[in-house]
Length: 283
Ligand code: FE2
Image (cartoon, rainbow, N blue to C red; front, side, top):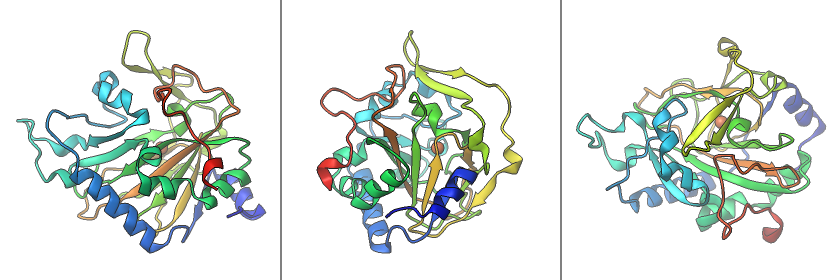
């Protein structure tokens, strides 16, 4: 899986690259089934962490902060009624699973460390590619939450910038079920924010540039199941809430370069027992 010169030129120009039929249907279904099994095994009692890039309450949420080297489950914001009870089934209430599926679950591990992804990382110029983070995103029917415009380098900051997002469509993503949207070429602007651990506990955003995104210029990335979208770490992207009856499952991986500095104040940290890993041991 080497990118062609043409693909690399498109990626450099746009800040994203759509690669159709990257994952076969059976593999998509295997990953979906495995995510369902993980959710079925998750005990809801006592856990009510809600993930949203808008929601500031999560910033003091240890469940979120400790999830860098664990498999944890985050609810849709609209999952609970005013009495704090789930409005629909558990399986229809989870926003995402994060952030170390790729290291802790054998099914996701096998997929994430595949030779094709190692080759892809090499053709993007990584010297020491490391898989920093994985997320299984459900974008549930009717209640799938909005993801506000952001750059992935805000959350996975390295010096110099090295993060690339790999976004695998496990189901068709359409305008109706709120596919990804991206600002074409927007990666050529600088990083606007960093999301860091605050010295006083919790997390905070450091603003580097307070100008607004030109969100009206964003384009819809409607893609079929099995498509891989590469996202430059500085590319502004978003997705609207899903009010349709169709879910929009996706699996994401984020690669960083081990030759770059990974600051200790970044929100996502690993314990000594599970450092970020590269592809070497797998291929
Ligand atoms: Fe993102």
